[in-house]
Length: 235
Ligand SMILES: [Ca+2]
Ligand SMILES: [Ca+2]
Ligand SMILES: [Zn+2]
Image (tube, rainbow, N blue to C red; front, side, top):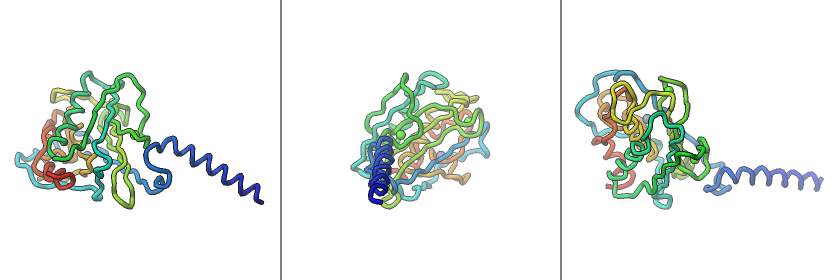
């Protein structure tokens, strides 16, 4: 009986320590307390309505999840090995720095391009990443931001962003493609952790859910976007 119990404990230790490799940063004690969420964004060929010129003061703070100061600034690795067009790193980097400039907190630290390495995938491994990968073919989804947070404290742990390499992209706002910086700025907002706005009246904001071919409105933050980030991370 005692031997069986010991075997069970040993087996448990092996499983738990195997887990430990994947969960490099969060302690094992907290692993069961971590929840994963995802913001899934779709692209359209044309806007569902004509976006308003006026910016509203709307924002959505998703579940009041936030980055605690002890985990800031965030280091990010951008995997461009599978990029559909050249030069996407600069556009993606701009998406992050745009938010950083709008708050007194240094939310992002080093943003590094990795053009030759293999992306580890969507995995809680202690690394915040952005990567180009095949999601669902042309059309449909253009990007997803996955995020992990502690269920009890609502503190963020990590994010991984995937951009769909199967869609048509541009870095210059071409009317026949999705603009990389436009989408990257929107996804960066999700990492902080602002949610999607869906009302037509909020259509001039970066965090509005709908994007379309040639849309560059989301490259620059609107009134509600700035209000949102400053509410969470300070003016
Ligand atoms: Ca990761
Ligand atoms: Ca797609
Ligand atoms: Zn979104």
